[in-house]
Image 1 (cartoon, rainbow, N blue to C red):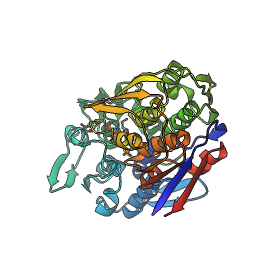
Image 2: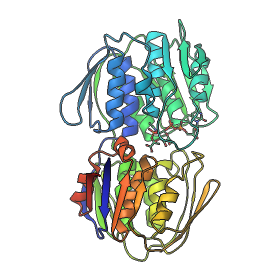
Image 3: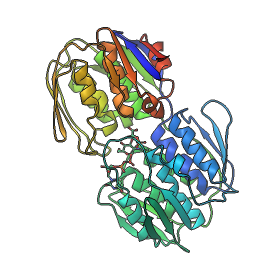
Length: 418
Ligand SMILES: CC(=O)N[C@H]1[C@@H](OP(=O)(O)OP(=O)(O)OC[C@H]2O[C@@H](n3ccc(=O)[nH]c3=O)[C@H](O)[C@@H]2O)O[C@H](CO)[C@@H](O)[C@@H]1O
Ligand SMILES: C=C(OP(=O)(O)O)C(=O)O
């Protein structure tokens, strides 16, 4: 079984180039179903999830070719199926994002429920309500979701919660619908802005992305374009936490600083030095970091995808730190693994209380989900001895070249078959 072995590696230093964002690349790949001419995507991260999404597209009749590192050319002119395969859908959550574009372009879609990280129940009711508001009939037959409509018509849709996936799926269904769609209480994540920018390049009429009200005016057809995926703010945040946790000095390059505000604010609050430029950020850790409180929220709040990494950091902040998880109801699975390594963390419902400053020791631990895996690498960097992380396929879903990147800044980290 493949495992990642991390040995104590203090004072990491140097620069890391951040890859394209998984959470932008996946919806944009799904949206490529909507175009009828060549689409060239740049800075697509080489990740397991991206491979699966490419396979989903191919299974629907789209041509998807890799034409160099991080570069794809996609042509969906010959899209010939509206039905996705269970084996692919069950492997990741984001597979469900093909539903909106398929409904928009084919007028029908049949999908099994999506799989993915076990961080909560992750219902899809808001996606489906959105499709229904656009006039689709939605049927759920023992886990197979069918949606169809002869003619989608724009509508005003208020989301009960600013769901990232529902906002994206509804935008993608609405770009070819008749008339105007308005999504209120929409998610405002940078990855939604990137999706809207991509769709606009294809010829769609989308305004307001990045605010809570998004307007889409349907067009008859979308064409092709070249688009570069935005940098991954969560990968960048992970390396920034690495600098803070080990008293290192790390510069993350290829970032959009304005996307990093909640992470920068919390690193500064705990006492790390953070030097910001437009497209790079340097973080310098020190031995006197103070405890902090974080509360996960939809963007521009503190990202839930950084909660596990900050929990690893909190184990090293002398005093009591608190992490409140408001987005997913079951996202503290990494706590048991960190406790195995010597951390003092007590979870009560959606709040973790960390009594920091305890020495961690290397252990055999499990990556229970993607960001849990990242948190264990960070903990392994400061733990005495050797940390052996299993179930690393979760990590490969979302971090490109992770060992190489950590090694380039001085970490002792290797992938082994044990
Ligand atoms: C591929 C991708 O972009 N994944 C990200 C996306 O996931 P995803 O799009 O799945 O996350 P959502 O924003 O939809 O989910 C947030 C909350 O809304 C709930 N909900 C969602 C949809 C729905 O129909 N009904 C419902 O109740 C979820 O259970 C969860 O509690 O945003 C999350 C929140 O920032 C991130 O952690 C994920 O990394
Ligand atoms: C939860 C995540 O991703 P997904 O929605 O793809 O499971 C994540 O990126 O941390």
